[in-house]
Length: 441
Image 1: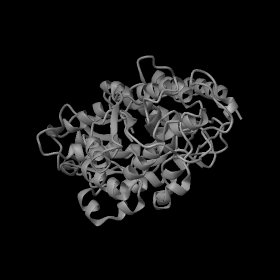
Image 2: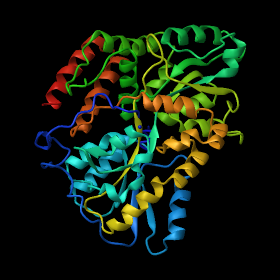
Image 3: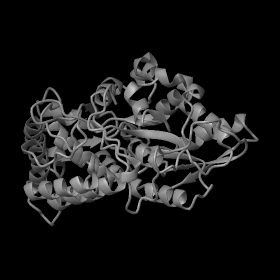
């Protein structure tokens, strides 16, 4: 999931660690009114006619084709795309404002997977009768879990996401590095060899997403999880002021200090990093599956087409842990024509439409069968490591006050990585205090 679309930004296996569902009465702040139970009652979805689809900016260029496929079959129930900004935070803000105004301007919402609990608890999206979505059992189980709040379905997963390590295979081979790194130390050693090559002059070792937005929450969480730490434990309590979390954050801080991560990367979201990798400025790059198709274009837009491969993220002592990404489609509580909205979601979540989308965009599907599809695997060899990434991914905190929680995480991580240079241990101690006040039992 890319988190510039909330994609940008971009989710998934059997269990989602760190999940937390709070009592609705605990919600407050500027995220709107909350009520007990969340959402509507899951009754009949009524009304047919034109609807709107609120979604982040589509940098893949394929969303319009997917929607047109629906419109051509449903001339009296056409869908109008309401394209929101690239930034996930700006997307969420507009959706929240629309909901707080009880506006019917948005019918179907393209939600970052981690927003589902917040929107459901605040009664901003409608509970969905599971019997109207019979294909849920054919999706990756953990993607379905992201669409639920208090064991009730509020959104349907249409794309998933797991972080991947893109790397310049041509450079690694020439430098005598025979396999992609499984640990951070191995990545550092590989970079030392590669950056000595004349053709890698001016390149940097690594970059991810470090601008102060949702992508930083993801990259920080991955660093912490990949060092054996957690942000929020399985008991639902914050536990980020630990030696393991410190090791993860310190790795990023040190990489900025020694220029392994270029200084410019403090402004990188998904697209800035993708462009840097495609322009030959990076040896390794952490990003989502959507990058694969764009970086392999042979129209002159990418200097690395045919020169890179994909591997799991590295960690402290072995393969790292991705943060679960992806997008769920939910129906605004204030929408008209909810029956049409539900059918549109089923259409977009179908195996046929998901396969068509993978073929065009390389975005991660939620249908389990598509990861075994021979034609897709031939087109996209990354599908096997992607499925592994999704199946071992960890969720961000599943909380009602998610907007406040992710802001606190971003503030702490950015203060340690940026020119503020807050000592990592202090940043984590401050974050622990802040999260403890936001996440209450």
